[in-house]
Length: 275
Picture (cartoon, one colour):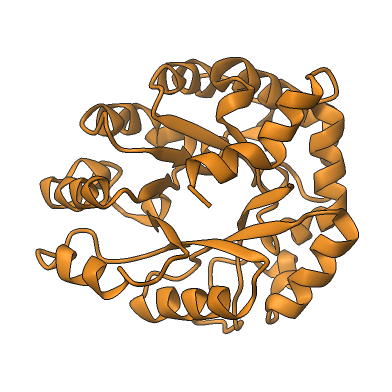
């Protein structure tokens, strides 16, 4: 089974998606289940994990409703206010939703680079651990040192790093990202998504060979058993088609075994997200 571990749905508004730059106008529209189903059918993908794009409980409810109505949506990475003292109440609200598999906070957008080290945020993560929910880490490269400290506070929590921590691919810079990503990968409770890379390069001029050094680092650091294929659709459409990204990942992983390929393209998502 092939699983896309990372995509989004949205009803587009300038207010909600102001982070989309003008040159990415191709994604300034609605993207809904019927759109994605056409893409995955053409690409040979069996199921997907829907990830929050707005930090609201309404968004989490909407994604869970979509998942309940569309069997190809195998799981949801939602959002709740992890710093809220009433975190348990928020989690109780969604306890009956079988497809809520993980939560995420847009750490990359916080003014405080040390937000993840706040005591109240870490209390929220501990609540996820007790519930058996995974946590998706959305950061930029500069957040990696703090992320290592953060992860070390939660040795029993399962973490998945989104978009390989967004290295500076456009500048072809590997360090200090590579050093820090290898250190983070020493924690066995952290996995990593092969996603979001084209939009960290120049979307108009990127090439697979430009991405290969970054693929090689994470493949060596995490190994095939802790990497997950993700499209980051529709964001990826700023620089590559859905099928084009899947083919790029396949080509850059050409040297691995069929068993390892099956793990990255579905088995790991099934196991780690407990689909």
